[in-house]
Length: 123
Image (cartoon, rainbow, N blue to C red; front, side, top):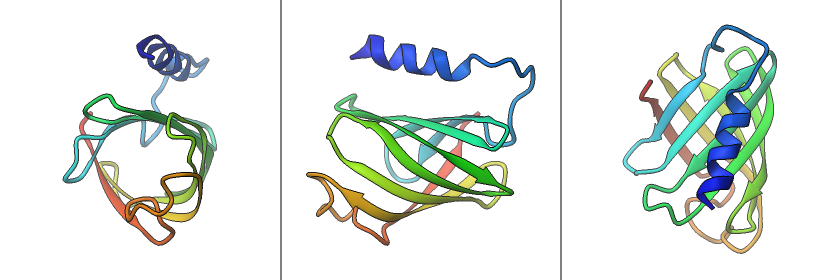
């Protein structure tokens, strides 16, 4: 599993661009130990997350316009697919709101439609 995570992060960091996007970096879910790496390339956004206890990981992909991104799960170790909106309220803070969920964990409070999360950028 660690090889897949390392490979996904390495691929995400590869780019012909020699600059960082406005929101590139490592983000922490407020009040949790879930980390998310964000990589922006033009209007495309990739988010790769891992549980703090390393029990699961996921990758989300979408498009960003201004400070708002529409994201969709492309890989999730719990076989759950989530669509959500991310609004970057500053270069160091973002809020994600779940718009739809399909899969075994959708009845959980944190993945049900309407659930929201705040992320803080670490670096």
